[in-house]
Image (tube, rainbow, N blue to C red; front, side, top):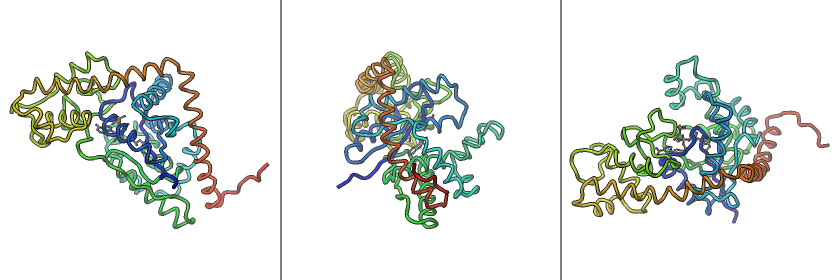
Length: 336
Ligand code: ATP
Ligand code: LTN
């Protein structure tokens, strides 16, 4: 039986991914890549919806791809590619924008949040059409499963609506995808402000655990994480967000249930607990960091690998795009 398709991606918006990207995304991707025919993209066209420095964007794109591989995404098994190397993404996005309502796009909460934060003059049209490009990413590959965080659920819902609308207007063309959302404990919060989601492009880095940080920096950030005065290692998101967050991290990295983490640290103080969390993180990150640096040491080989994968992606994408052009009535050039 052929495997169902999976698509997911991350923006190259930082030099290093953070532990939330690792636990909330990469670990799931790694686990799913055997069961699915998986496509993982570094979505650089999404990154330029906010201003980027050209040299840095290129470096961050390579670094993000290297971290995917170092974390266990296998470029021989999965298709790991840079979005802008497959022109069909931008092309299908344009077509899909022609069946997306202005009001419909305006209801996307990520756009509403970001545009409010930046103000109208700093908000680009691309930020507005961001979800349409994301729909193109997904639909080009006849994707069934889209592993994403809770914050992206609305975008996958829009993708489903666009697929159904296109199919009913022009005939069956797209597979309608399903979001695959990890549980609450796969959601990681900022160590200094455990009410907000950890984010790689956060303004303050003190509460963000980067995959590529030095061991000493990671250790310091964990030991300084905000906790509470109760002194008991107990999961309670509302009352004990700091400790609960560290428990989620520890549980995810050691493969333990939260109840097992509570038992393990029963009667022990936060100092002990933090040291164990620190050790688990360092043990997980060190090989990933080393492998990432090794891959970045040979950028030509990394670029070659990405190009081979992009060619594989383009083959699938072109087939869908070609069917779309045909259905909507664009006059096709005769084959040479
Ligand atoms: P940015 O700050 O650039 O928006 P981010 O760190 O918030 O980046 P994204 O690039 O938006 O991350 O997301 C990449 C993937 O990582 C998505 O699947 C997202 O749900 C997941 N992810 C991001 N942050 C976390 C987090 N704190 N906890 C769990 N999963 C996360
Ligand atoms: N918007 C997503 C990144 C992304 C994506 C996708 C995820 C772009 N295209 C297609 C899944 C499928 C984010 O910011 N996490």
